[in-house]
Image (cartoon, rainbow, N blue to C red; front, side, top):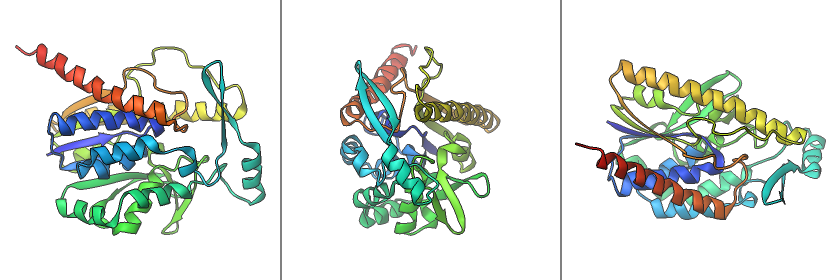
Length: 300
């Protein structure tokens, strides 16, 4: 059984889409299991259906207005660099309403349902492959994996949405008497789950560089500093997930193919820039193509 795992990474998911496009269209890989965390959860339903061109259009044309009802960010361009600061009006409005998050992302739920239809959901269920999204149960302090096999359309769309809710900047969701948030908080790269579900070979798209190539510029204000702190913590979760995944693969004789981003794409993956995301998609496709060509050239 072959599995595709796509990690969390916000707007960097465009790079993962390019990698997956090459694996599906050029390598012609067929996947029995597709597991996504956070942004990976948005990609995998359409990839499983082979709708690469559609998910490319969806992914590279989304903007902040289609994600946030209340956008906590202000993005300014200074010396050619995107600088993120707090939207004081929106954040104060959230506090006055007694909300626990800086922003709200219910528009993203509508966007998901608009672009992943009931007809596509039914087709996907009929395929028989296992489509799994990762969420974090904050009330129980644990990861949960939600398979398409266990839910009907509306509820599964909700789990996709919840998997992407990067709190406290996006919506905190109460469901089944528990509170949920982004899957990446508990399992950013769910390799072990793919192996536990029976995968014998796993293609893993990791939306971060394998090693930090340069010193990071730490936020100049409390808001951007908080984003940088979250990123540091998530990198540690990522490293843990990969280590555990490698150990599980070794114990069960599973082949792992790890695909990292070759360069740091952005300092803030919560900023969705259409042109940059189109560029990252192309980079992902070319990166895996060149890597595959190089491996072929080195074969005896």
